Length: 109
Image (cartoon, rainbow, N blue to C red; front, side, top):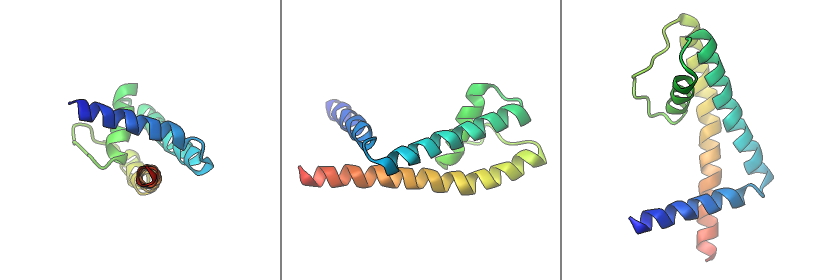
């Protein structure tokens, strides 16, 4: 339990330190914009609550896909297909950049 807590603190520190890198700042902004676009779209088109929209956007981009919420209209289904292709790419580059930074820093210690 203590080791998990220490690892979470290290992750937070790496995340905060990563904001000194302009590439990481741009990727962070892209991830939040992508989540925001998805959240807004599902709110307007599907009429879900804000929390359900954000939840579905996050679950979709992280490829978890619980299946408890699903798009119902053809427009939502088309948007979701494009959203996955673009958003997943952005999210994976973000995670890759963060993990490269974490492992690079940890190797130098």
